[in-house]
Length: 111
Length: 114
Image (cartoon, rainbow over all chains, first blue to last red; front, side, top):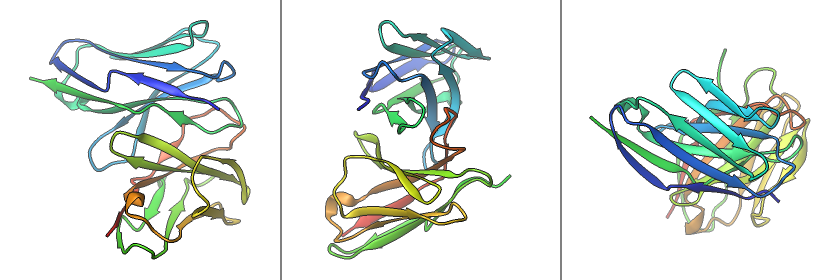
């Protein structure tokens, strides 16, 4: 089955800096890669996703890149703000299979 | 529209007891997945239901079970509770398992086993 590795486990940046979180997956058949943000006391919330026929996707300050050959994908947050502080999860799946998550990255943005 | 509703929000049980958690998906979503979240382990997949049938199953012991009703609402049950079952249990709904669209999560049920 699918296995997703996520790094780093913790990340501290200054407000205004960029943050990058990286994930690798094992199943070459996976073709959907979402990213979730979880704030304290809440369930994970989808912030951006990418499908295997696309190499990069942007949404304002957030971007995701995918390298299918290397089986890794990354989340990029630019101009970080204190409200970006949360736990971020990457995930991977193929249609018909379960959505498998990485272990998460705790991002702290200090002002 | 209403989001994913999980009840109860908090639960305290004693070792050896059993517990049932409930999840109501977003209207129109027919697939419900359950995850266990513990510190350091991230979200571990329990099972996924679609049209009242279990479609995928994670690597958890048989004490963990679930079901889905005709209205897509789902329940999960844990029997003979152990201290290690203390966790946040999250439910997520999606259109269906054959599609690749984002899952929408509920706020979870925090289970504490004492």
